[in-house]
Image (cartoon, rainbow over the protein chains, first blue to last red):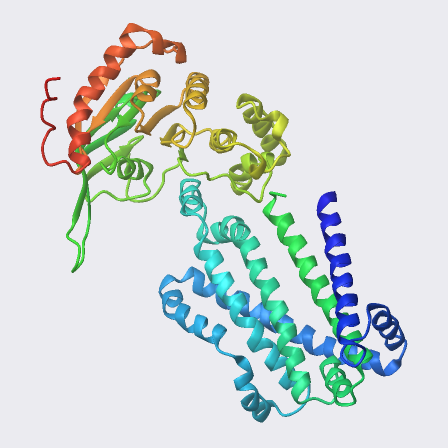
Length: 245
Length: 275
């Protein structure tokens, strides 16, 4: 565990070095230096307007995540348990997962209008399919020997699902949730970039319009830190559940 | 002794898996007749794909025979698992999300056994299987042999009358298998359970069993049943006994032809050429 933490520090130092070098090469019109970026981020975090953007993105992202996870997991469980439905839905989910969702954005806007519901919807269509696919496969991949064991122990179907299938499938479901939440954040931010009046995506696009390089970099860095933290947290839970660390 | 006679009885058991447009029916098993007395250690050896596991499914009540009757303790098995049957499979069935102690306690908790009794039985089973020091370990940190011990302990705490073992040591190395065999014999003596062992290892069957049944290639039938005559106090050291070679030899003699059939070789190999 200690050496892994060391790896992370090494990676961070490497990234910062690369950033600084890149900055020296391309100049302040394109990038701000790590130090200026951190200082700018700290300054932004002291303004009320910026917290307004954070709250707006946070609200959209939280709503979209909850919908993606609940609906995705339920859909995946149903399809995983019912083999025929799963066989029918499998290629459809795969297609929905792989189409570039950005092409649906105009339609989403027409349906939901500008504002919160559009970006939530856009976040959800990014996150729900990977979660459903991972959950379905997690259920299908539960080793058949567990079901044989359940029958030999004369467990009821409900008990088999609750005490054997779900715990066996949970680590893989969490992998799906982790990927799904990362994509939900992506979807929410894309929603804000294109048509929104608030949120970090909106702040980012406005900073781009006025060529505020330090602002762009600071917002990007904060988003990066946030996404990496969420991902790391879920990964940690996942590892705990696999009990093989 | 009348109750011993109707402990496990198979009469004319067959199993046919129905085919479809592209596959013909598969006649997997039988007809098989068998009587197993209470407390017997009975092994079944046979070539791969001969229906050994299908037979075990029928014995466990996991699978309904196509024809014939299977009787356990006077009751006909009809595709439901009766009380008093435990099984350990070749594939690792330990629950990776539970530590060793909770793995072993699993079945008792599902049955609503009270906490003190669960603790008593689990602690006893763990110490019996030499797992006490690993109570808090998770399966991922244990070797394959240790995980099978966990599965055996998990079955033992439910105090089964019949223990069905489907190649439980198939994935283990030879030395571990011999030692696990010793533990199995100890467990058999102490619990008085009937053990039915499915295996492809002739030496394992010959060393452990009261009787060894040899199955034919598909559809699996018994072509020979060899009584070993071992004392119940036997252990793995009997592999150096002269009788061990005789038994293994007889089992192999019956099995050889069938294994060749099962491998898909159309005729017996020709005589070796003169040097």
